[in-house]
Length: 134
Length: 152
Length: 136
Image 1 (tube, each protein chain N blue to C red):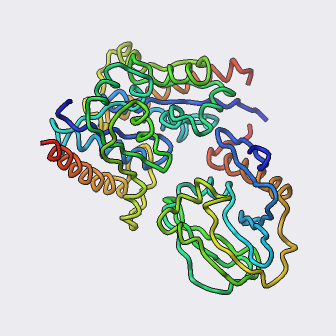
Image 2 (image 1 turned 30 degrees about the horizontal axis):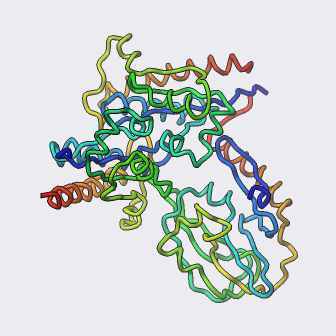
Image 3 (image 1 turned 45 degrees about the vertical axis):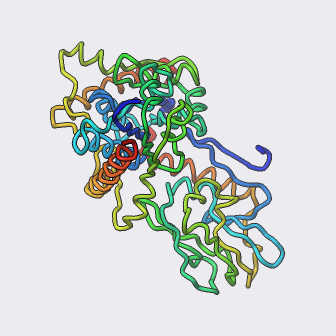
């Protein structure tokens, strides 16, 4: 069992939610919880890359989905991963009704705000999952 | 299952019109059930609006045709589900409060919006085939507009 | 009236490194303006299989944009839909140009955005070529 919590976003390219999920994941992994959280490419996992599959099976995972299609959660589970937590960006938007992220390629101001909120939520979840394993 | 719908594919999107329902040009479907009719948004409407994040009900009991039965909010806009005819509202789909995405996932089934009793005529409603023709043109025009395509 | 056939583009968005970010942004730039006949297909939806992405790729020529040599997008198209119409391997392009991948995988700096525009131009060239082959 690896020490790090694996955070895997869907990275959907058609909607702001996919960009927000991806951005927040990288914030957590690179800035907020380096050494405690990691990520991997969902597509590598689905295409059966040995390293990716081994990493997912050996880790506790958080799936970050942009929309109700839930591609990240479904594919991690299909690959035999343990989805210990699942966050949908759309649900977070519903908790923050004033935000209207519209841009997909580069996040706009509201997209950045929602990404920061999500990143904090993910970081807290990483801490919780690591604590549970002690 | 495929026989239940008329459908057209525009780019990668399959857009469906359920057979046996009646429709308005405001992209609302009506299932006639005796005195109380069930009403919802069409597949085209949910597709064009995008992911629905909130659904609000204005809470009025009596509406004129075209007045908002409900409003739904996506990241792009706040839009109305317009009353298909003069009507008295009998019930709203309370489940949409928790799960507004039901309209996106199952617009003709679990994503129904309201149940209403008609106070006036329903003769103006389109048939499924009439709406399908209207919907096809609208879908293709919307797609062209989104892409900004121009004829040379 | 000139009708240019539709072309699908499927990009990797790989989180492993800046190449995934570069691929994603370059593909989005195509969608936003360079080639209006393109249809961007979402790779996670493509892999999950319950939307119209695979069917589109079966019917229309589709170009994968892969960040690295693992070529997830290309393999996914070949596995679920059929042969690809043309390929873009961003890692190989950067090597050819003698340019390094973005250091930051989350935020692209100015120079990296220009690099994404350059990659987008390469994608556009392949789209033009595919449409020419389709007899536009």
